[in-house]
Length: 197
Image 1 (cartoon, rainbow, N blue to C red):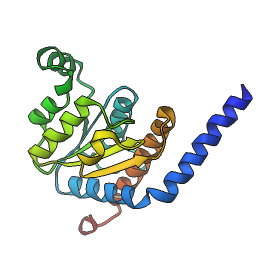
Image 2: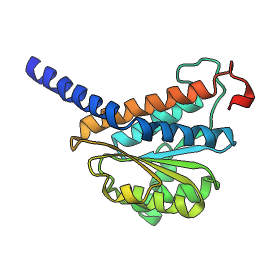
Image 3: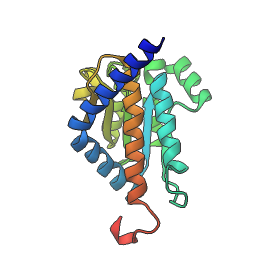
Image 4: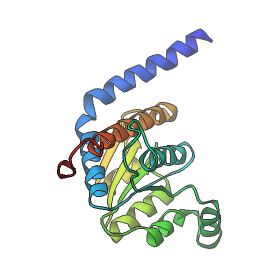
């Protein structure tokens, strides 16, 4: 058991080091786009399936609530996986492939931003969501893994965690989500002048 414990952490550390060494510019660009979107009065929308749905909800909650700065103002973020009535109605009536795209059509506005989270980049409902988002005038970011799948070429900004192991991709996705939230906190810190945002 101890060998498995150490092996898992060794793989995590190795991947985290690779992410640190390669993804800094892309994550900075993601943060810049998110901050600019929020500063302009628009919202961040997130979607994913399974563990990635949990990551979408987690990141949205950190933005609307707080991450590390207790008196930072609330920021507009919405995970599209949280409304069970919408999920089941849309899936039943229109098909599961449309479960996020339909909500985007109803809830988004031009110049909002969509973050699609997927370890494979191949989920049909995320592909449909990104295509709808771009049609509606949203900037799109893919938090992806492996080779990025079909989403890699469909989003405006693909960020690929370079691994084929789903658990380790998910571990780094939420780490990148926390880094994003920290950078957003810094940008909207109440001690900063409004002119700085």
